[in-house]
Image (cartoon, rainbow, N blue to C red; front, side, top):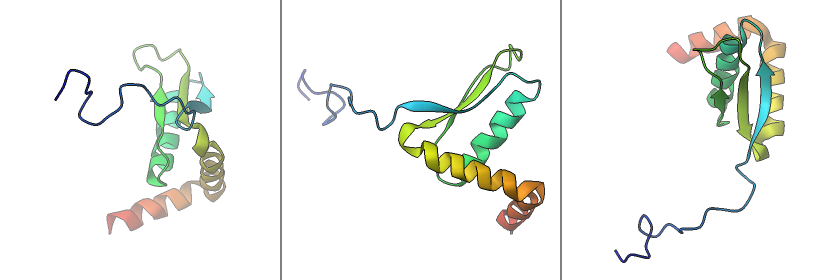
Length: 100
């Protein structure tokens, strides 16, 4: 590997596109914000949407966010709306089906 190579064939310059820019899908500073952010993150990940939780448990009075790639924002909103419309019974049913 020559001194100009970076991790093999990976380019040294970062990708300047905005396809993977993270945007906020959910934000809350309520007492249950961490729990809600975790649930949203789980629903998105189960549906193939990468997401991250931004927040800290050590300072629970601060805001929690769930962020998704900009290109997936509309699909993430649809998935979240569908999950909220289906309600807790659908979540329990899906979990039971996944355990079989």
